[in-house]
Image (tube, rainbow, N blue to C red; front, side, top):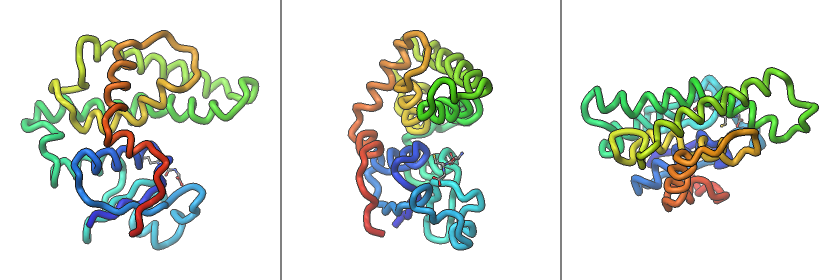
Length: 206
Ligand SMILES: N[C@@H](CCC(=O)N[C@@H](CS)C(=O)NCC(=O)O)C(=O)O
């Protein structure tokens, strides 16, 4: 049985729950991170030296970095959610990498700023949020006339990107309408597996 370690409120943990629920694969999830204060222990660090969540344990194999976990699960049990050829795979994976490299800095800044008054927000964080809008416009432009990020089908690009991009859309930030991104996000959010991933369900017993 796969063991997923990570609190459900984490967008990166939600990606992995979303994947398992799409696959219909049995797994257990245990609450780790933030308020559970259990990721700085030697035991957890031996599994994941970053002390971040998620971590996936598959027998003797331990995987961390949410997008790497998705690639691992796709290769192991979810080939239909990935491409077949190297060219197909790169079409999918570039959006996963783009999420981490280009979207994530502004996403984290907007996430932190949402809890602060405007006067408490740093100039640097405001610049990052402006850049987030630039990145979201790129995704919006890419999705014009398309239902999916890559290959014309639902893939691990959607599983990696949707939990985070939905939060970006929901932030109260200064941005134009992003109709194609919003349409795509609403369609992915309507999937039962996404609803399970983003609901506040307690951890299943390990
Ligand atoms: N790039 C990593 C980021 C992991 C990460 O930053 N996780 C956050 C939650 S989204 C975390 O562990 N925060 C500290 C905590 O929950 O204790 C991944 O995608 O897995």
